[in-house]
Image (cartoon, rainbow over all chains, first blue to last red; front, side, top):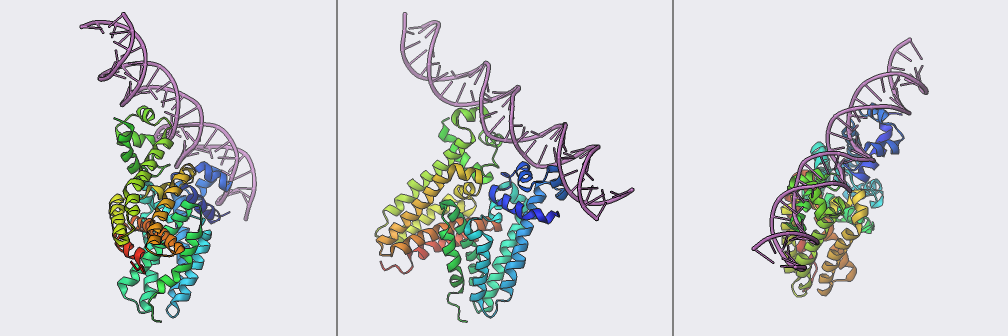
Length: 186
Length: 186
DNA sequence: ACTCATATACCGAACGATCGGTACAAAAAC
DNA sequence: GTTTTTGTACCGATCGTTCGGTATATGAGT
């Protein structure tokens, strides 16, 4: 079993418990790997495991979301639709929490991972803005809409989790494409 | 010194480090109280300290926000403006993170505090919706706008913290009153 | 006025448990 | 037979919590 085998499980665990809340004992139990084996695959310990999880999430953005937005010049509405579908699936209809948000809210992990998290958000925002600019929107407004999309997704995940009711996330995901495309002329 | 003296410091600490990330050693150092003294004021230990912090935040909602919305029947725009001002101040222009979000994202604390957090969000949403219904808005749409306000605030806090740039939160707070009042006839 | 009792606020030291991490040899895999 | 992977035993540090006890102040009993 290669190191990559266990990364999805790590993502799930860090999402669920946070960085400080997730112990090596839990990881060992959930993966079925002894501590020695964990340190064989991740010599850097817990920090490296979290980094591997975070890197995998960032690669999801790179490989699943960015291509959709890169080829969106002609049909922004359809692209945002596809982006939202993929995002909805990634967050399991809103039941999963976002690793970025979890890590960013903990001081300790924030210091370790801020660069990667900040980069991911910026990249996603910029890609959305680029689609909108190509579609003829003002650059400042386009960037704001990219930010608004991130705000809507993150806020909806928090609210849905708080209420134990995923309808708000579903509604946000459904409305997001139109919201991004409003007043667009193409 | 009474127990209430230390609650604001507890709020700050739990916001900063999360539930699992905040140790009694840190609390002891930050408050100047020995660990044993902390147990004198909070016999229930760390859980009771977090509960006291959460209760205080919920009381902020009750005493600072709810009255604004309760007396808003005639002038919704001004009320939402005041609500946003107070919220902006509470979150220190976006530099503070939200205790609700911090606690809700950690499995352990979520189980302990879900009821209080869920109630707080519901209460705030319902109060906003009530203002909008009184102003003539459809009930379903009013409730959605209440949810959208929570989503915007929470999402903006996450994004601003992730980017180390509080402009998105500032923009959201500034735009929120108009967003809530759009298509209103009064 | 002078004890004595009670209550409040505080503290250092230590508890058992668990934390993240390591050393090393057995055992699988090739 | 060598490399990769793992189980076990172990480490010092820190976790949340508890114990035993001190200092001060208030108030009752006499």
